[in-house]
Image (cartoon, rainbow, N blue to C red; front, top):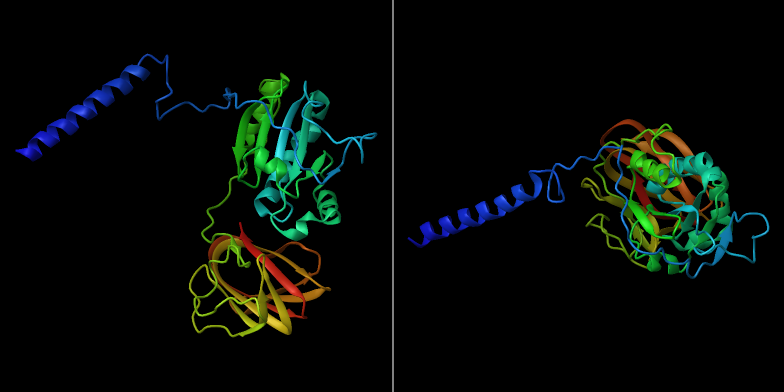
Length: 346
């Protein structure tokens, strides 16, 4: 009997809630509860997320307009009357790198129509705080808009940001009206820019960059976020000899040679060493550096495919495939001073 009453009560609640939902959506006057909202590119809904915070704790400004460099940093107050895109990024982030062609394209396309891009470079690793490294990245990616070095995360925290990349679109009155985190939504973001500068949808939209599914997650070598080291190997800040295990599960890596771990990465302290990775993806990249130019042999399933020279702290492409599949990557490193920070995939 108790079960019968319970079933009746559940059905009654369902009918009441369902009736409320239908009543709110049936005439089209309020579709906020609908799961089938029309997301047509003809109408990007702009919100009001409040006034955009000021740039805070900026260590250095790059690419400032003539007459401003060095002494007159940008402020949000100065940018009132403009449409502003704030792009949080860091130069070793593969997701940021894949987004940059769209951001630089929008800047070149709309900069004469009251549109401004400000890149906020918030480093994930200590070496990304170096101004010369950031300047090299700006040249590599053709970035001509102002970039703020947010080395101490002051502006990141002011925006309560948590993502690389992250886009905050700000209207002429200084209010944040649109956000997007991560890759994708390029057409929608450009449509929002066009609405704010008064172009409607007259211009050609950016082609959406459809990414294939990536199975292997980003892998960090540093002790702060180390999760996918082979369970047969124990990380140590002291110099330690490692040998490859007999088996390596998917999405795990292992070391061979003499290595030492630190908070951000793992460093080869012997004269030679190896890294082995069992991955499922199309492409593989590594963020790494060398004390001097170091040759790294790249093997896939035991076959040498290339030799990569690594020195500057940067992102290096190791594997470029045609489709995603499971493979074994092995890096054979010759020369002490090699340091790895992360594997990324795409």
